Image (tube, rainbow, N blue to C red):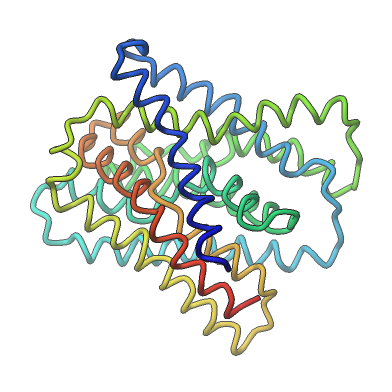
Length: 314
């Protein structure tokens, strides 16, 4: 892939955080504004993005094998990176900090950034967007189980019903019958769905900008743990994913774009859901916030470099 075009695409995404940062610093965003924006993001924008990514996409039976590979590797690779991250941060003395670092090291921004980034890097390739949607189903299931346990260490906090009863997954499950049956939805319906879904990336970046404005630079840049998380999440995890997939391809004929999709998703920065879990369950909110912010800023450099490896696949 072209390094410069990828760099510009990712940089444009991160620049979207500037309005949120500026408005918060100018005191035009009140306290609690992030909670309102986050609710709009979770319950409106992202679900409609999932629906828009599935509707009116052509389905063929031959796609089922690729969807199966995505689901399988989404679960296996996330679990593997989680286990590796536990080893990496095993010497961290503060339990809450260690748990926040592990969560941020393997929970990637698949929902808010994954689909828009895939559309920007591979315009016109609807298969890659569909692969990301199916990855999201597994990601949300694991986030609300393994992710919650990683942050809390308490199995009683895990709510299995959240595997299905979360807004993005519900939205996908509602849209999938239309996709599998090749039912075409009228443009008059699809247009407003698309408009609402298109809010996802700008809203998520605005929320990031507000959170960045609320944190002292020293809390973000003067601590070692966010950089260690970035090394795992932005470099080690995608390279591990790429290596495993290339090794598997020596024995099993996996579609090259399945490899590309899983690799790009692995290169995404830490997900804000790790911060949300830390806030909800009394975890180390500061470390989770610093790691998420640092990852998102550094991915401007890491994603373009990593994407050069895609030329070895397609």
